[in-house]
Image (cartoon, rainbow, N blue to C red; front, top):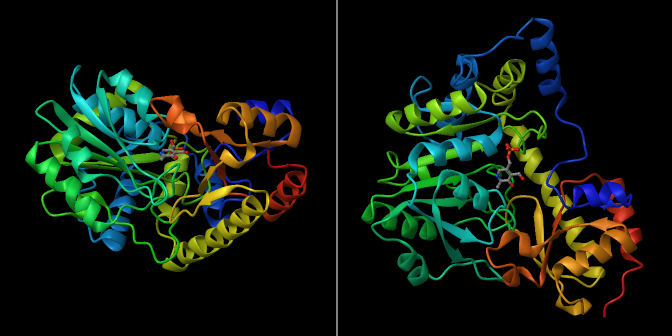
Length: 368
Ligand SMILES: Cc1ncc(COP(=O)(O)O)c(C=O)c1O
């Protein structure tokens, strides 16, 4: 959709990258690191100062004690942290439980690591799951469950009760949770982010993944991490070493500065995103979309049935070509495309001038 947006000179509300600047102190730290010649390979599993900053932040925010020497692998974004983790623990034929709709990469990640995905539906409007359906997806072949909270594309934030139910199944079937928590600071309406690793019984079986990308507005830097128990980390580090050797050294140095930003930074971030969410909800609702109000992350899932198009792909093509707005067809988040036929996802990590332009263009849109 980003390519189509460029081709049609459309406003890109598809891919999840902000169009506003990163924090000045974080950019300055990267400039200073390059100037100071932090330009050669870092330790393959991550620069010491950066790993220590990651551990300090988890202790501060989640109350989680992480050993920076034995439990952290710095990767090229959450993307690499996820595939490295999957390849580290999955043997061909192992099953991996995946909530659906899911962030697109998890499907290919399962294929590349030889895992057989078992999908469990998150049901609108609140994207809750049926505990019986989840329990039925687990069994002796289950190696892991992939969890993404706050969730892309739905904006769901898993509750403690839901996480407890997942934990019980992981313990019962001796399975890992691989928890993608990249939107951990983007929370609305009092929603609380609970890291799976903090639940009793999960410390040894949780792999926690996050990144600088979304929290510090630097999706192009490609710096993320996986946190796991020492034995699991040893395996992740091996895969990571042979896949990429390491993440950009000067950007890890800047990451250490970013992770030490004061609490007020995260409060401001969540406040600004809450305002963007309201702005985008208003625009979409006035344009005739039924919106599923997100409690976290920076996307709005919509229902497009009112527009009378054959499916989501047809409507997305019409929007990008005729209205000049790019969004992601819902089918790309489902194993069976038919399940996403009535959905379209919009990203709201955008500046006010982008919202204004989108609002003007949506004025041309008519319901079918
Ligand atoms: C749930 C989720 N995980 C991971 C990523 C990618 O993270 P990174 O840019 O750190 O590789 C995204 C990007 O949209 C995402 O939505």
